[in-house]
Image (cartoon, rainbow, N blue to C red; front, side, top):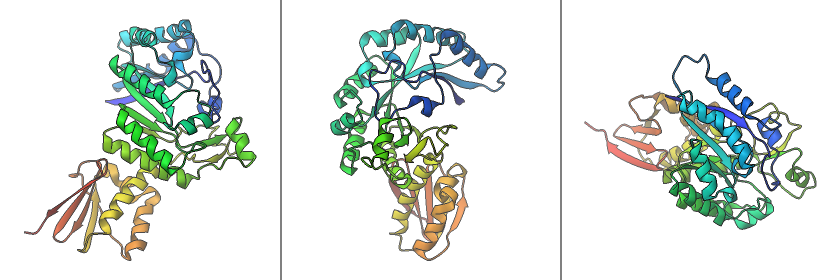
Length: 354
């Protein structure tokens, strides 16, 4: 069944700090404080008249939901809980800060039927967190994750590669720390420099060099691959496109592109495919994949097809084979077949003679 999100944006509400990268009004395209009536109206707008069955989830995005006053939390949750009890939606989720999780807060969320909490982790490096003015520590992430898990919540982590102070070693350490915590899901948002933020001023003054799109793709691909190999689903890579984010006067630099997710998967698949092609002694007859993996395997705008032809001085036959599981690339020679399990990062080889 298809999962569909009903977004309720609460930009900057409850945030005790203003992070250097943050301008939630630009990121979400929403301003103002929602009330119970607007939550009820949003649920009705999304669900009424839809014929096909869907797994509807109400999601409170944009701010630090558990940091806003308890009375406002309950007001906003009440219409969502009513819709949940009536069977019109299937789940309720929210995003919040790691230092705004307490047993009392979790009891309230549970009472209103909320089961999924995503933490704005961003980094597990103390230097990076300090430069970003996050106001929380890596230890807060560990503590909040443990509290959520012990209370039976589904736990999500949101990461932001490319913040000031991050280098390759920092990225690797953060990735390893998240893999050890093993949240139930993750999102990866390479940094975009958004006008109206402190980071934008640092960029204009030459004090901060943002990631290029290419660098953002490389870092996000590294994180996503490690997460998948650890069994952590990555449900989004890159910011959701909005009119503001697509306006070059609002996004001044950094690793923002509406195609970030496609580019990251292209990078992951291409790296694994080329690592096999580099070592196969037999002449490769074909490269095959399930139809759902065609764009990832052949690459965004067929960039992998083009690079393979240049790298190996020949054109390969690219096949659709729906007998292959999703996420598997088959490299076929006259006598052998190599199966690349892209999420696991493993390769299996079998003889095909006779």
